[in-house]
Amino acid sequence: MRIAIGSDHRGVAAKIRLMGLLERMGNEVVDCGCHNDEAVDYPDIAADVARQVSHGKADRGILLCCTGVGMAIAANKLPGVRAATCHDEVTAEMSRRHNDLNVLCLSAEMIGPEVQDKLIRTWLETPFEGGRHARRVAKIAALECGGDETDAKS
Image 1 (cartoon, helix red, strand yellow):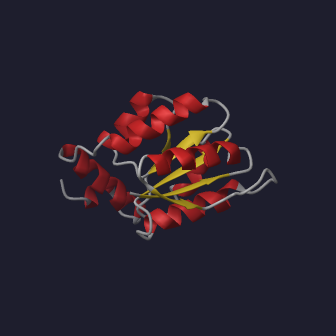
Image 2 (image 1 turned 180 degrees about the vertical axis):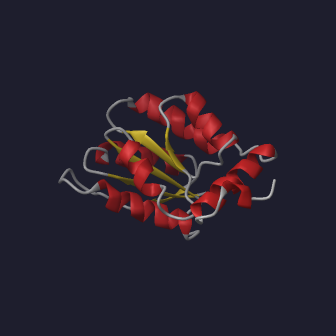
Image 3 (image 1 turned 30 degrees about the vertical axis):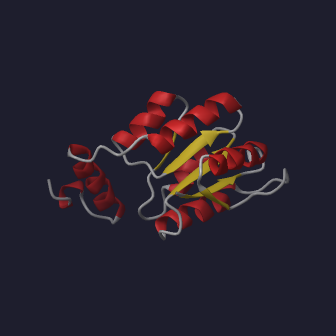
């Protein structure tokens, strides 16, 4: 799997560590920055990762900042991106099973390395269930295009 990863200055150390985990798991990793602890604007990094996913250059994306929330908000502005902040294994698993989440946003400071690793493993290993959930994801895509959620076929 090709995974784009990015962080703001507060998540750079976690990003570097997680890149190693992703590579050990057999993934190709695209580093979208940032590369040091100098302050950056997180929407710029979120946009880089989200563009990789939106344009099909990466299968999935991972973003890190202090809480993960700002990254999720910014990433969701790009078409085809479904980003959310997950803080535990249940949300990481369900985000894949039910929402086909393609950009995982993590807190670099509120959860530790062990939890981050578990969340990433769970998220990467959990398949999308499809079925009734595919219908719901299609409705999200219709909203994203400026349509009404009833525009997606039931």
